Amino acid sequence: MNDSDGKLIAVIGGGISGMTTALEAAEAGYKVLLVEQEPFLGGRVARNSKYYPKLCPPSCGLEINFKRLARNPDVRVLTMARVASVAGGPGNWELSIRVEPRFVNDKCTACGKCADACETKIPNPFNLGLDQVKGAYLPHPMAYPLRYVLAPKVAAGPDGAKCKAACTCDAVVLDDKPQTIKVNAASVVVATGWKPYDAAKLGHLGYGTVKNVVTNVAMERLASPTGHTGGKIVRPSDGGPITDIAFAQCAGSRDENHLPYCSGVCCMATLKQAVLVREQYPDAKITVHYIDVRAMGKYETFYAKLQQDPKVTFVRGVVAKVSADPATGDPVVESEDSLTGKRSTTKTGMLVLATGIVPAAGKDDCPLPLDRDEFGFVTRRQSKHGLHGAGCASRPNSVAQCVQEATGAALKAIQDLAAR
Image (cartoon, rainbow, N blue to C red; front, side, top):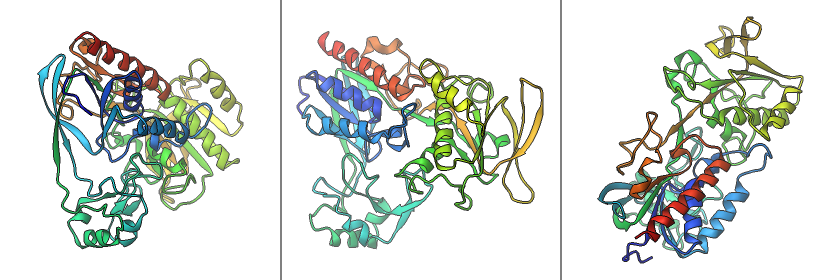
């Protein structure tokens, strides 16, 4: 890729928003640099179990995008990379990008021989550390690029030599070093995505202190075929089946002490997860504690169908407290139904906290001079400077909304180049 004429669009973040922006711009004939800090593209979508309301897997949509990327020479992809510093200004942003060593080059055929030779195990980053994986690993079965990664401690230790000896295509590079790449971009799209609100800050909800209390993102990994349970939803403490499960909505959201705003998608994510539980456990008892169920437009039908399930109970009111049952250690949920005024204390086998959406890259993580709102989301006010936000970097969005917004960001970036 030659960006010497400055006609380059840089996209920071390789999730669904970043990929969409990059592809739309590249397929319109523009040069794009796509920068992603993880070893693979796809972000949160790659970790999802299914989309709502159709309950189809995200793998098909990701595969289409990966094919589009592979055959488009106008997109250069940098993984394990992040913007380290920025200079210049509107129309000529000078980006210094640091690329961390992967210790595996593009000769890799994903044969897995390095993993077979490796004995060291590390927390599995793709599964949020819920299980362990070999220190020489393919991030996930559909990873793009389809290339293994060596953990730094593996590359530096005796297992590194074993991995190199096992590799028959000369792909293991134990002396791989960090690189710094400098580019000039006329327009930059920030699609750095989101992270869940830190559930450890919600002490009253028992996360980290009461067993079988998990977050909604962990629940996605439990339900996913690429997760550590192979898609079987089980109790984390003992791997047992689900007989009853509760969901606590707005875990930290719409709360002036935590996140004052609504994250928009948590309600539908919970309804989807309730359906996934029902598919696996037809007799399980499901309780949803909510403030308001925000199922807009076509999603109302999805919600109404679940309301008709006799084994699903909706309790209007936030969870006040979660404690451990003295006999079993299972979650005990204290709540009040604001419609009836009735208070209840109920033991459940598992509790899922619907934590909200927080911008993944804060001011300290992304050195671009971005204008942000009071919650850290990128605003539209800096568009005049050739800087644009897309997807959940700019506000809480569903996957469909991210794709729409990313397409708009691509058009804005193209306009930046056309104006030069």
